[in-house]
Image (cartoon, rainbow, N blue to C red; front, top):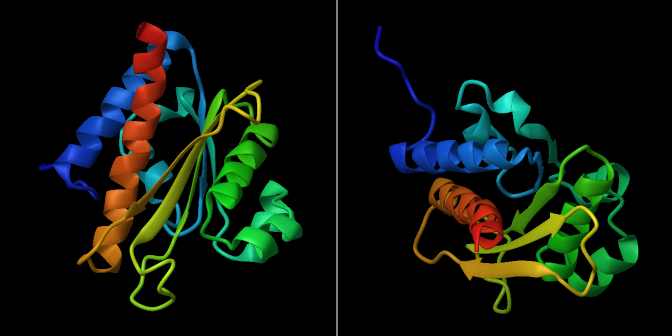
Length: 175
């Protein structure tokens, strides 16, 4: 029987590479996702045996969920907006604090088709990576604008970037 994959082959290959690298180092991952709605965790769990690396995933689509589930401050949300480095960082930090993971990725954005503005157009996605014990001054964050893509395209590109961000953790520790 032919195996059906939920994700494009490049995402599955990158997820497998991330899991292999984290497994080799004994590291665990948590995800804190908004606009991707759990797709990053889904891509990681597409690989059999991922449970030894993926500790848990948080899908916090609403601001209320970000506050209640991850401990994101209402002040941060009101000051910077849900799609901001400050919120992505708070999401990643909240995932670290509420899991057994060593590394967490926070993702928040505007997948569209509506919800954008001149300052934050549709396709804007913000990523943050947190490590257990990391200083707040060592924020690893990235903002991307995926132009010309539909909602699914934005979300899949966000998963690709998040996987690349996770892959960078093991490349740094190899240096």
